[in-house]
Image (cartoon, rainbow, N blue to C red):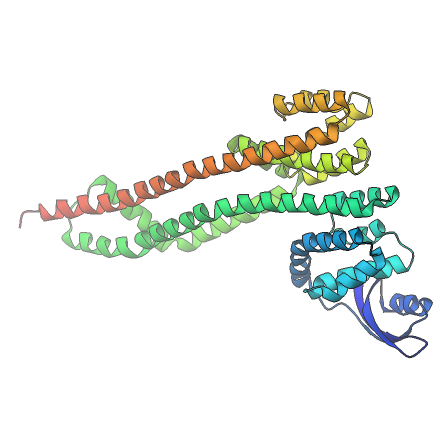
Length: 398
């Protein structure tokens, strides 16, 4: 289904505008007439596939704001319908406004809030929808929205920390790599012609350098095609189930400590929030599986779900997977024994989020000098190879 904009009039002559989700224009007109509205104009969606992806992506940044503002309105005693109408009026982005109006129309047509949210799976995750469902069934939607706001805030803070830590190394790699490419494709070839004019045998390091420079200059298009083909092959293989699993297994070997801490924090915080919100353990585990990004760790949660279904709890199955640390398993076991599993999970998440930030900082402290050292070695080899050749030429008898 798609979102259609419409303009209609009421039986009293008032003009109303909004968006409605439907299969086609005829369905839009039928829905409007069933709502005692007289359609004036129906505008079909004009967003192409590329813009649609950008449209959906831009919404994710507004979900936190939407959740926080709706939680504040509900806590102040405002009804859900009125709260959504208020947020649609004050929304700063047209994209989010259309989503809110679509949900508002669904609720007016008899849908529950979580059913309205579920119609937009690219914006609101399964975890989000299930928490709202639990809040509606328990009559504590305002409390759940506060929990969701805190959950989204902590997730965003953790993500921003990791992304910001990677900015400097990424800039360093691109600038250093670009400098080396310029040296090999522009500077070195000029010296190559000079050495050829002298006609003297060159040292081995210089021959190697000139061969690399010549290959990059003469066959750059082959190198570019090979790199592009490699990227395409990697992207295609990652989209397959087996390829994604192998890629995640490789990342787990290379950056095991950071990835394990990140996924442990995600797993524990999401599961803790769901359990605190009243979601049963099995549906909660199924939702957490969608949140965990690493396929190796995600697959291990299936074994945990089987163990929980058989009455083993989650601590023993988690220990059997070998993915989570003994500390995590021990704390979860204590939480199960004391009947405070949700609180223990949230405590573990806080511990590992703090530990992850320290690990990322330590990794960056090692990575940045390593990049500088590697680039220094490459540039040093280029300069030294040229100097050796120059010295050998100046030693020629005239």
